[in-house]
Image (cartoon, rainbow, N blue to C red):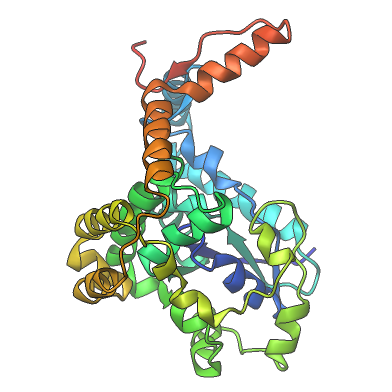
Length: 332
């Protein structure tokens, strides 16, 4: 177990190239990592004011812990100090003796990026990884949904996550490093040298060779990375093949308009250029009917919380008792 460890947090949306970045960093002999820890989601999420449904009644849980913190000498600052020490100890115990840094790559951290920077301050390094927003969505559709136009499953990432990441980075540019997927996928040594410099480490010798043989323990993360090389320069423009019918192009225009020029500029992209590329794609009627069907089904499932209903039905079928669940907005 190393005597000390410095966390490296990768903040990105899913399908933004975070596994590529994680594996490349882990090729350094002083950097340890595991697939996707998710450790801070429940710890920081306990203070969330919405979006949580649980049998334990999140509102009561949150109120009780906040009440405990008021009785704790040092209050919430003391609570966070112990939480930080707890997480750092876990990073240390899972790391080999030679490690000085630990990479925590958990894409859903985009929802708590501000809280993570507040919790760890100068004790950690923060890398914000951006990718062309339409390329991210295309990768989700093609890789995880086999070309099906499923929207609601990843709205939390595409909207809430993007909004949080841009806001957090804009307020913390002086202590965070920003890099684009389109730059690192080229595997330019100068670009990667800057990445390692940002975490105060030298780029290792035989970087490319070590990278391709780096193994990351765990079942979470990009399963495709285990089947094929992560270096794919053609992935930069592959998104153009996905937005090939009027329905998809209309959604893309609205999404880019929602992001806006200012946020895109912070991410390193130009709105007019994206719209121009989108308009250049030849129109096709392919998959329009199925896209409409999936959109309707997904929106229905979202608004009526069908996943919760189906979960209860499965319990009843197995003869198990089901209990009411509470949202964090339930009145106490």
